[in-house]
Amino acid sequence: MNVLLSNLVLALIWAALTDTMNAGGLVIGFLIGYLVLVLVFRQHPDVRQYRLRVPRMFSFVVFFTKELIMANLKVAYDVLTPIHLMKPGVIAMPLRAESDLEITMLANAISLTPGSLSLDVSSYRKVLYVHIMYLDNEEDVMNELKRMETKILRVMR
Amino acid sequence: MIIDILAALFIAAGSFFMLVASLGVFRMPDLLTRMHATTKSGVLGAGLIMCGVMLFFVDSGVTLKALAVMAFTTLTSPIAAHAIGRAGYFIGVPLWDKTVKDELHGRYDEETHVLRSPGQMRDKKDQP
Image (cartoon, rainbow over all chains, first blue to last red; front, side, top):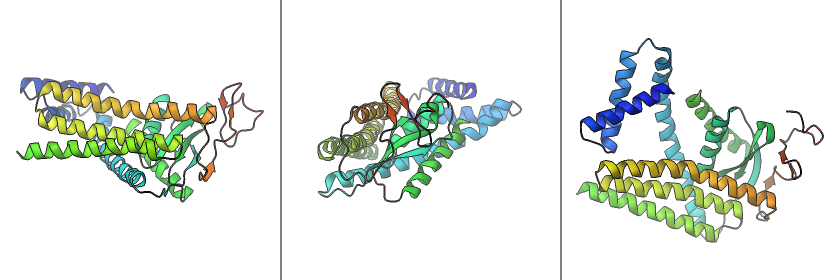
C-alpha cells in the first residue's frame, strides 16, 4: 500500500503548490499523481498492481454510494409509513475473506448496505452472522452479500 | 449562486435522512431493526451535510475536516452498531415477534465465549 501513500502525498503537494487545498484540488492532484506514478514507474511490480487497484477502488466507491442511498430510501419508506413491511431474520453467511482487515471491511460494508447489519463473526471465522431486514428470499439475499464480498476482495487482494 | 443552491440541497437531504434516523429509533419494533435505521441514515445524513458544507465554504481547512468527518463516521458507525447489536442479542433482548429466521440462536457459549458456526458440533469447539 506504499504506492497509495505516495499518491496521496503527491495529491497533497499538488494542492499545496497550486493553492487549491479543497476537494477539487485534491482530486485533480490525485489523478495527476496517479498518471505520473503509472507512467514513470511502469516497470515496478507494486505500481503495476496499483494501476488496476485504483479503478477498482473507484468503481467500488460508486457502487457502494449507490447501495447506501438505495438502502436509506427503503428504510426511510418503512420508517415513515404506518405498516411495517419488514421480515427480519438472522442468517449465517459463509466467509471467503480471511484476514482481520478483510473481514472488518466486509462487515462494515454489509452494515452500511440495504437492510443488512453484521452481528458477529463465529470463532474460527467460518461464518458471519448477519441480521437482514427484508428476508423475502434467502438465496437472493445471500447472492447479494456474496457479490459484495467479491468486490471487496478484488480491491483488497 | 448555483453552488449555493446545490449546497442547500445537499444539506436539506442530509437533514432529512438524519430526521428519518431519529424517527426510526422511535418507530422500529426491536433493537436490531432500530440499529438498521440509525446506522445507515446517520452515515448518509452526515455525509450529505458534509458535502454541502464543502461546497459552501470553498476552503482548505473546512474541506479536510469535512472529509475526515465523512471517513470516520463511515468507519465507526457500523462498528458501534455491531457492538450494540451483538451485546443486545447475547444479553437476551427479545427479537420482534415477526422475525422469520434466527440462525444465531443457541450458537453462543457464555462460559467459553465461543461462537459456533452452523456446521460445527458442540463438543468439537476446540478445533477450527
